[in-house]
Amino acid sequence: MAVYDSGPPSVSRCEPHNPRCASLVATSTAIAARRSVKAAAAGVLIALVAASTVACGRSRNDYELNVDLGPAIRSLGSDDLEVSEPAADKIVALGLDTIPVLRTALEREPPAVRLGVVEILERLDDPAARAILVDIARRDKDTEVRGMAIRTLGPGAGAEARAVVEAALSDPEVDIRLAAAGACAALCVSSSALDRLVVLAIEDQPLSNGIAARAALLRILAGGDQARAERVREAIRVRVPTARNGDAPLRAAILASDVGDVSGRAILAGAVRGDGPPMLRLQAIHALGKVGTEAEVPVLAALDGQPAFGPYAYDALRHLADRGVAGAQPALDAWRGPAPPGELPPPGAG
Image (cartoon, rainbow, N blue to C red; front, side, top):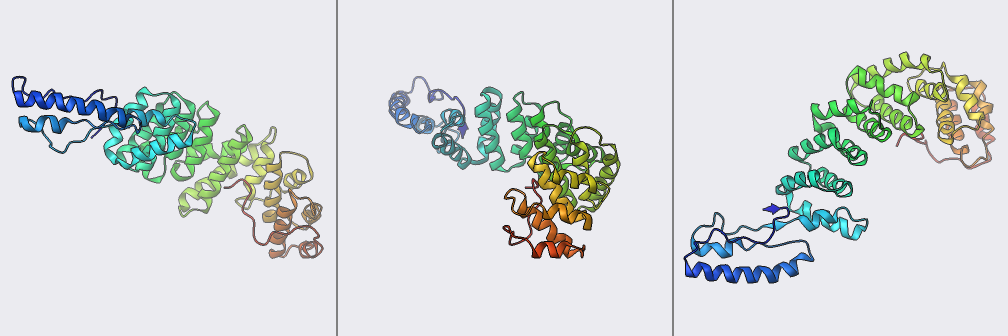
């Protein structure tokens, strides 16, 4: 049985006037004191409840073993992985009996420890553990703890988890929206949530949030749920024309290319020639491989020899050549810089 802050071993179940029991009490207390000193270093306190009570005939389980997880739980907050990882492994090895103790730790311990508890609950992979994770994802006061709990929520987490993730897409905290965008790929199904994910991909700041939202949308589009994918396509069709400010038009043009919309081709070419954020330039290059024409071939060919962008430009030209776009194959034949051996993944989609 796992216990938390259990205190010293108890022998209170012995009869007070039984000489034999009194002797066992004294003996077991002395043994416990010696063993607890040794066990404390390992974070395990063996409570000799069975040994002290069996002669009195009052033990409920002659083989009961109490394990004090207090030291191990507090070790989860250590910055030293040689301390925190063995502590986590010890708790996980004890299995599902630790779940009530972990719930208590989430109420008592500081954020650094709670982060470790969230990781353990994910590793336990049990409905009771997932229910606690959903609760923490909804209400923990620390943004990092709450964000980590959101990231643990996957397809098996259920409708309640889905509601938490969909609501978190509109959270005022940047890091919570980022976590929700990642979890949305597996959980979000409602039209309103998928529309919100599209808005994040086009408008949310910092840019990393928008990149994460687009990555989630790409996973949905590539998945097997056609109804969900169609809801994403519809949201993109509606939202792309409304992008007006800052980098939103470029992000919208990139997203449009994901569903075969060529309306942002000029914006994409301008971004490739420009000096904007490197990730957006890479995404624009990749997008031109899907929607570019003969007019964009020189734009891509001009990146020959540029280490950061050349491989993606070559990959885009290869896609244009496969589509039979005029000028693409000659540009490939004339390429002087490094060429990727195979198709490159969409930048930022990992």
